Image 1: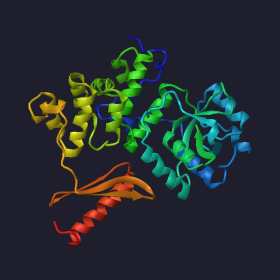
Image 2: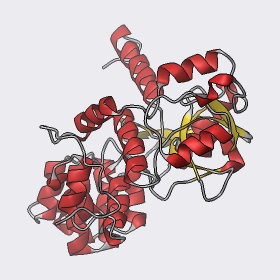
Image 3: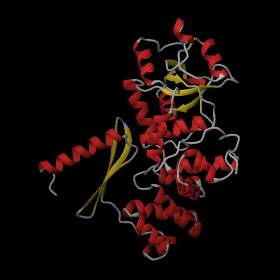
Image 4: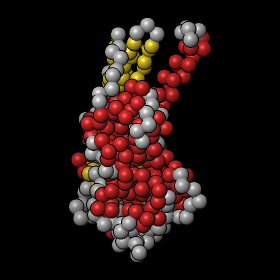
Length: 354
């Protein structure tokens, strides 16, 4: 089958592994002339970050450019790779954003950090040539939302030469995969839409253009059959609900419906069930066969709400005489690792008896 017009001319580089992260890393390494990070950093160091540059180097090209981008760049005296400040009101989401789900707690935490430290990393935007003065976000939707919540008026951005479509999607997707911020639920919703809107004629064609195994696409499309409210319950716990677990949940939903599925998700979280245990439940081999009934849950004796920078991130619960449960979510990787290190240090030092 011939590739769709949408995807024509942008086939992924062949890759011998099915790993999304490895594929994304290889493709990022292969990207030429899209974003010159070194040049962007130098531009920022030279202070050219508050407006379009008005110097003689603005017409220097770093490689092949589309006609629209070249005309825009020259008209705005912009140097490729330069970091500039753009009004937040000029930024709009791309119809090919790789992300679909954004956690409110994550946005709120980032807004607090941005208010304190400022924006440390530029987003990537694409000019909307049909609407001069506006830009589509190619990468950085979470930062844009957090900046708005922090009541900022501008955003640091690099303007890239990409058409809105599969190329802009793949840039954002590859960057998200490297940050571990792309989830199977984002993929499920977006890839299903790609096929429904006939941007790709089959899941095989989609797999070829993303450089992924067709089985990876098939799993995501199975998950896409779940109602969004069911997916939303799992998005908040990416450590518990990866591709394999989400696939089992989708199978369970097909047989039992939304109410029973939500109860199973709750049971997975409260009882820390493994993917194998859930697979057994789906096959009806375990006690989860009673999944259509509300699972019994032990009532906690005490609960302490935990906040970081004024934002509720979880709680500490005690059960009976010998059980203590700490549950945190929406943390940055750095904060998670820092807290884990502190807990390990406390245990090793004997401040807490094992």
